[in-house]
Image 1 (cartoon, rainbow, N blue to C red):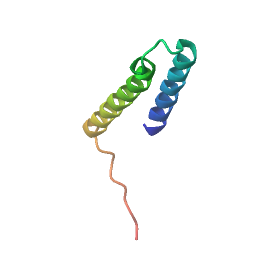
Image 2 (image 1 turned 90 degrees about the horizontal axis):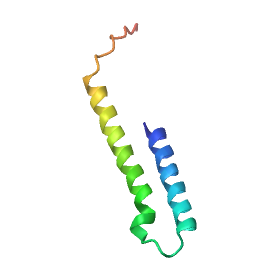
Image 3 (image 1 turned 90 degrees about the vertical axis):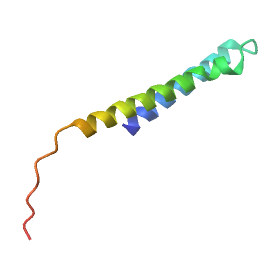
Length: 67
């Protein structure tokens, strides 16, 4: 899960950097940072969904430990 969040953060940063370089000074900062915020929201939503799926999944069979 954390690897996916890191990839999303990197993609959001790369897109924001590209918008900053291409957009120039005519764009407001909120427009340039929008990909970062969207990537963070997607990562949090993805983590919440993964957590809900993990809590609803069946328990694994118990393992037998021999002393």
